[in-house]
Length: 89
Image (cartoon, rainbow, N blue to C red):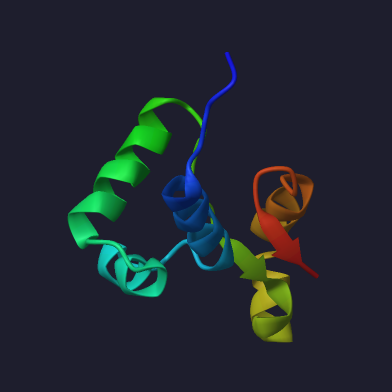
Protein backbone atom coordinates (compact mmCIF):
# COMPACT_ATOMS: atom_id res chain seq x y z
CA UNK A 1 0.00 0.00 0.00
CA UNK A 2 1.51 3.36 -1.00
CA UNK A 3 2.40 5.76 1.79
CA UNK A 4 1.44 9.43 1.67
CA UNK A 5 4.23 11.68 2.89
CA UNK A 6 3.89 15.35 3.68
CA UNK A 7 6.60 18.01 3.54
CA UNK A 8 7.69 17.34 7.13
CA UNK A 9 8.11 13.61 6.49
CA UNK A 10 10.17 14.35 3.40
CA UNK A 11 12.31 16.89 5.27
CA UNK A 12 13.02 14.36 8.05
CA UNK A 13 13.96 11.70 5.48
CA UNK A 14 16.19 14.09 3.54
CA UNK A 15 17.98 15.16 6.71
CA UNK A 16 18.56 11.56 7.79
CA UNK A 17 19.84 10.61 4.34
CA UNK A 18 22.43 13.40 4.60
CA UNK A 19 23.55 12.23 8.05
CA UNK A 20 21.81 9.38 9.85
CA UNK A 21 23.59 10.30 13.09
CA UNK A 22 21.82 13.64 13.51
CA UNK A 23 19.86 14.08 16.69
CA UNK A 24 16.14 14.80 16.61
CA UNK A 25 16.97 18.22 18.00
CA UNK A 26 19.42 18.98 15.16
CA UNK A 27 16.86 17.85 12.59
CA UNK A 28 14.13 19.94 14.23
CA UNK A 29 16.29 23.06 14.05
CA UNK A 30 17.20 22.32 10.44
CA UNK A 31 13.64 21.84 9.20
CA UNK A 32 11.85 24.25 11.54
CA UNK A 33 9.59 21.97 13.56
CA UNK A 34 9.64 20.88 17.20
CA UNK A 35 11.84 18.06 18.46
CA UNK A 36 8.85 15.93 19.57
CA UNK A 37 7.39 16.32 16.07
CA UNK A 38 10.60 14.99 14.49
CA UNK A 39 10.69 12.07 16.94
CA UNK A 40 7.04 11.23 16.26
CA UNK A 41 7.54 11.41 12.48
CA UNK A 42 10.66 9.25 12.69
CA UNK A 43 8.87 6.61 14.77
CA UNK A 44 5.89 6.71 12.39
CA UNK A 45 8.18 6.19 9.38
CA UNK A 46 9.84 3.25 11.16
CA UNK A 47 6.49 1.71 12.18
CA UNK A 48 5.06 1.94 8.66
CA UNK A 49 8.18 0.20 7.34
CA UNK A 50 9.43 3.07 5.20
CA UNK A 51 12.67 3.36 7.18
CA UNK A 52 14.12 -0.13 7.52
CA UNK A 53 17.36 0.84 9.27
CA UNK A 54 20.10 3.40 9.62
CA UNK A 55 23.42 1.88 8.57
CA UNK A 56 27.04 3.00 8.67
CA UNK A 57 28.97 4.38 5.75
CA UNK A 58 32.44 2.83 5.99
CA UNK A 59 35.49 4.38 4.34
CA UNK A 60 38.14 1.65 4.27
CA UNK A 61 40.77 4.09 2.99
CA UNK A 62 40.84 5.55 6.50
CA UNK A 63 42.22 2.30 7.99
CA UNK A 64 46.02 1.99 7.99
CA UNK A 65 47.51 -0.67 5.69
CA UNK A 66 48.94 -2.87 8.47
CA UNK A 67 45.62 -2.97 10.29
CA UNK A 68 43.80 -3.70 7.00
CA UNK A 69 45.93 -6.82 6.54
CA UNK A 70 45.06 -7.98 10.07
CA UNK A 71 41.36 -7.36 9.42
CA UNK A 72 41.32 -8.69 5.85
CA UNK A 73 38.74 -11.42 6.51
CA UNK A 74 36.33 -9.02 8.20
CA UNK A 75 36.90 -6.36 5.52
CA UNK A 76 36.15 -8.88 2.78
CA UNK A 77 32.84 -9.65 4.47
CA UNK A 78 32.04 -5.91 4.49
CA UNK A 79 32.97 -5.57 0.81
CA UNK A 80 30.62 -8.44 -0.04
CA UNK A 81 27.79 -6.75 1.90
CA UNK A 82 27.76 -3.58 -0.18
CA UNK A 83 24.02 -3.93 -0.54
CA UNK A 84 23.77 -3.45 3.25
CA UNK A 85 26.51 -0.91 3.84
CA UNK A 86 28.07 1.94 1.96
CA UNK A 87 31.68 0.75 1.74
CA UNK A 88 34.35 2.88 0.08
CA UNK A 89 37.48 1.00 -0.95
